[in-house]
Every structure is written in C-alpha cells, then in structure tokens.
Image (tube, rainbow, N blue to C red; front, side, top):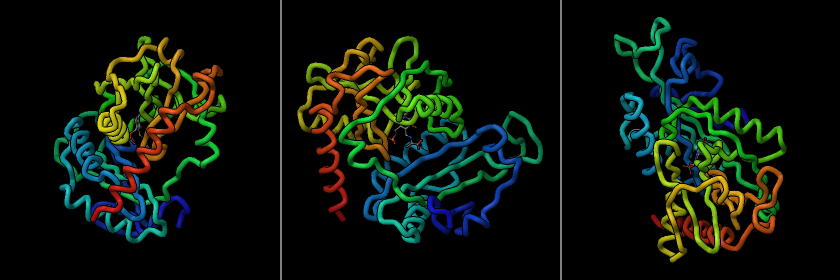
Length: 291
Ligand code: PDD
C-alpha cells in the first residue's frame, strides 16, 4: 500500500487494491483532462460537509455535460466504505469522474456513449503543522492564466499547477491569482483579506471556485457578527491589507504573512484570522459531536 493511498480504492463499481486498478490510455481524462474531481476532508472517520461536496460535484458534472455515474446515496456508500477500510482517523477522500474511454481520439464527445470512469480513494489528511500555522506562510502573486470557468472543479489544472510550482520554486506556500488587477483566489485555495476589522471576500463568480471552506467562513462571520463585505478585491487592497488568509478543505484557515517578499500587516498572523481559526475548530467539533 502507498503511504498516501489506502487499499482498497474504488474504480467503476469495484473496490480493489491500487496496484490492480487500471484504466485505458484512451481515457478522456488522460487525453484531454476531460473530467471533474472533489476532495472531502474526514475528521474522526466522519466526512465533513459531504452533502455540499457532492452537490458541487453534481454541479460541476452538469457544467461539463457529463451524467453523474452515481447518485448522492451511491457516492455516500463509496465514501463510507473507503473511510472504514483506511487506516487513518483523519483522511482526505478524493473523487474523480472522467468522460471515459472511446475507441479513438476526438475532441467532441463519443458519438456512441461510453461509461464514465469513476475513481475514488482515501488518503491521510495532511494538515498544517502548528509551528507553521503560528508563523503563517508566504505567497507570491501571479497573473491568473486559467480559463473562464474557474467555478467548475475540473481536473484540467495546468495553470494552477504551474502557478503553485512557481510559488514552491520561490520558497512560498501559495500563488495568489490576479486577473486584470483583481484578486480571485489561490492556486488551490480561496483568499480572504482583513482591512480595518472588516473581512473582505471575493464574490462567487465564474472566475473563482466556490469553496466549501469559503462558505463556512462566510457563515461563521455572519453568525458571529464579524463585519463582512463580499466584493471584488483590488490588488492594491491585497498589498495594503492588515491580514490575508488562505482557506481550503486541507489548509482550513491559514494566515499569509508575506506576499512577494513584503510583510502583510505587521508580518504576523492577525487577531481576526486567529479568531476565525478558533471558530472553525469549534464548528468542526460541534458538527462531529452530532449523530
Ligand atoms: N483545492 N480554489 C481552488 C482553485 C481550489 O483548488 C480549492 C481546493 C479551493 C478551496 O475549496 P474547498 O474549500 O472546497 O477545499 C479554492 C483542493 C483542496 C485540491 O485541489 O486539492
């Protein structure tokens, strides 16, 4: 077994060892990046916000005109078996669906329908070490070179991959994607800004992934009375922010304390982000205690 992938994995209706899971080289996910994915965090063997993740999967499938191979109950059964068979209590469940393999290479969809390829596996949940969280992380800013449907969680991630690699080569944890002067999100995270005690969040448009964590942050801000403005954030506001955070299913709420070598605010994680991190932990605990 790979230390990052538990056995068994799920492939097209079967549970089998990773080493025995094979797909055709003509799979359209391989040839065209023609597919979608989800990543669901699992805490104490409980899938977190699974309905929201499965709803986003369904919305992305509809957005690329691919029939969902499983209904909500079917996906839940797959996820539950993967969780039960994996050796870790905290996990990340990866789901991927592609448009399957035709007998030829053609950009247009197969004329005779072929079955979708559905793949899923459990891995360990890789979280941020406490000392890194306490210090915050550095980021670079880059031009957003993605396509115009960033709201769809598709596997064609080359622009995100190149942006994140640039960050890594520059010794940073994330790349902030700027389109025409406006902050959209990170290469694999949503980005929030705090200025004068007000939380600023870019709106959900076709140029940003609607993060499941992003929604939780907005819910927490609203329910706890934190001043919140959902609006476009200009690059100049990003650079003069008091706090900047990245959020995702694996990063949760993580302070960005340096952008392009310049400190954010005083260069330390700020009080609003610390508060939000605590609220997020409390919320997770309250959800896990239920049921
Ligand atoms: N990425 N924006 C982008 C471009 C992302 O890839 C992600 C998550 C997010 C945050 O979404 P969520 O809160 O639902 O995790 C925002 C996942 C973790 C990944 O690609 O592995």
